[in-house]
Length: 292
Image 1: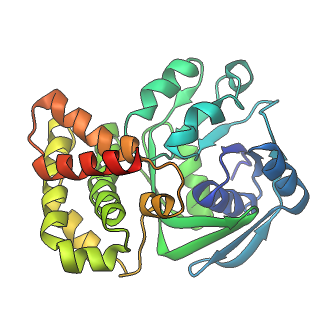
Image 2 (image 1 turned 60 degrees about the vertical axis):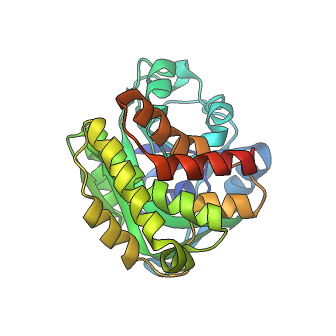
Image 3 (image 1 turned 45 degrees about the vertical axis):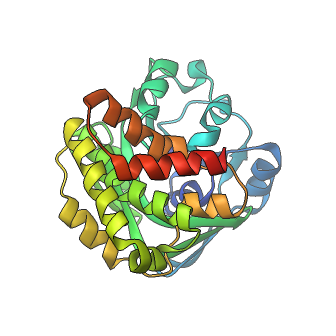
């Protein structure tokens, strides 16, 4: 397999995990981050603790700004810090690279394509529960790590597969993005409102969780994505009781949340298509009032 030059913008839970796995396969990985984090990673590399992959360490480069060409740019920041993070990636330096955003939500692709007109921006999603408890240390909970990429991401999909990730390329961009949001939005909204992991939400608010799954699926259909709310519900009920969403975690820690990228995006799409989503709307409005 060809060795790729990969830049990871935002080496948190998701970006850091993929950086470790790809670097251990021989790819040249540079993590773009704030000065302190970039220096730490450049000097000490990354460590991954995972039930699926075990205890791994990898050497990576650390930099505040992209200064040379790469084959792939993985954008793995939170939506709340995307604009600030992109200042680390000048368009003239990035050039014709493949840009793969693995962000929550559906609205970031347009902004990336406008910012990097010479690059090939390929839609992507990841399903994983990973966090960064401290700089240079990544924790992966559970066995799930599944990446889907739109056409144009074949070489990266091959590299991820070789690294042990469940990676696939699928033709329908809308379906790819909304499949994840159909699962993520209900879980994130309900766990954040309750301030609990998924298990208590299923036990105490199962009807509401099912209603939001159904409403988001209807919005996805209006956006041109095939959806299967029954399958989404089955998947949601198959996850461990202690599973937390990143939005609930951010809310609990007093950090900015991705409410607008997740719940807000659903409401804006529903409004565009005239889809009624009363349960979802009530929860999003409650969280907007609480979280600001």
